[in-house]
Image 1 (cartoon, rainbow, N blue to C red):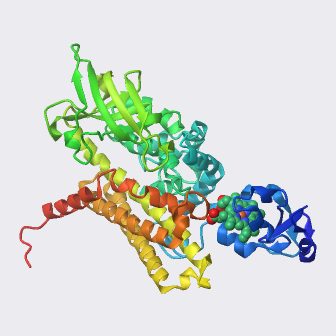
Image 2: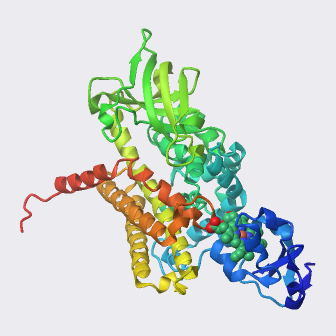
Image 3: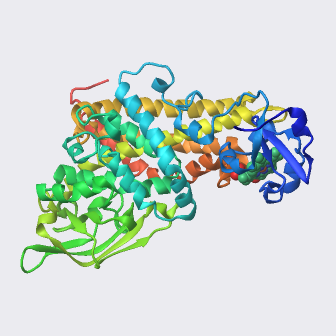
Length: 516
Ligand code: HEM
């Protein structure tokens, strides 16, 4: 039973030797804590014996309260709390306008059925309960995500669902989120939900380190791997025991994939390839057991490229690349020195790897868009909340027309990209993700998404002010988004390449007879 005190009783604890403060109806004894208070001892003691709710929320995220439950003395008699605990709040669908897509805020959608919403609900609860603490800790210090959590995610079928619909879901032995959705009904909107809920903690480095490598590496195994490889590699990956990364870019070749230099030549027996070369910016490469690697087996250009499955051994070295986001991502520089790879590890035919790389890109780019739009939505929600609660010149920021215009740009940006994303996802359900017809549309989606993220991140920081550029505290989400939003505009095909690809495809499909 929690103790209850009247306001008059609290007011008596108003000295440095005996200081209580009220926040949202809960009474905190801050006598000992005051000297450790990051905002200063006197700042806190100035509120001894008083209700500090309004000023507290102007300066702290409400998560702070969850960390300091040890200071709780009791509650104010008859007070109705305005806030759920920070953890409970994270599990719920937000009622803040535009913080969720419209179908989660009472509007109709032709795309989402009950199973999509039930899946989202269970994933949101699961990630919050299991992953939040590890994500926050690793994101801050750059350490590897807890491998046990990857196993736990495996038990829920999360790694399998991250590969979208298909036969491979049979490898998820314990079902999908304990049976919330069946393999038969699982479609690309279910996968969209999985990819969105995966990145809601706004710990981009940790999120990539936890599962992004598999999400882009395993599709090649599913689509082009021989039967033995599927049976050997997919089950441990889906259980969360092993990681497959995608190793394409090099210091010598980024968007110009055809320029890559890593070589693979058959040895004298004709049974093994010998691989030599380097790969750069390989997501999750630090943790990978397998590298789905683009190699040069033939002459110059796109026609000389093959794809090989390379198992890590002592001839494969990985070194962490420090980038804008946390090293928890495990982004690696990879070196192959005389690595022996059995010929049966070849995907498809020799010198036909370029087509595999290109067809794999559709799904990867779509997935990048899903996570970017979701993060932009979170940045917008945070900025909107701040605009409503932060008072400057005697009124809330949102009362300033200039701020409202920036918010309008953010709302419309995320809604436009979401609408485009849903249209593309619907086409993926109908035509399949690899279909050439939607390649141009996915490229346009990626181009629009990363441009929109630029606008949202910029407006978010302008509105959050100093907090938008300080790590941790009130601006945590906006700062993390602003620090990392640029990365996806480079990987998976740069903005310029996306724009060019989309227009070239449109030109290709242009009817010869069309005239003004
Ligand atoms: C239960 C009571 C309180 C606790 C547990 C607490 C805890 C904290 C913590 C952990 C921080 C670090 C920044 C963050 O994580 O957000 C902080 C910062 C701060 N706190 Fe408190 N605080 C309390 C009450 C207050 C009150 C009543 C005030 C006065 C209005 C206050 C003023 C500040 C200020 C000015 C900062 C620095 C904010 C910044 O750098 O932007 N705190 N507090």
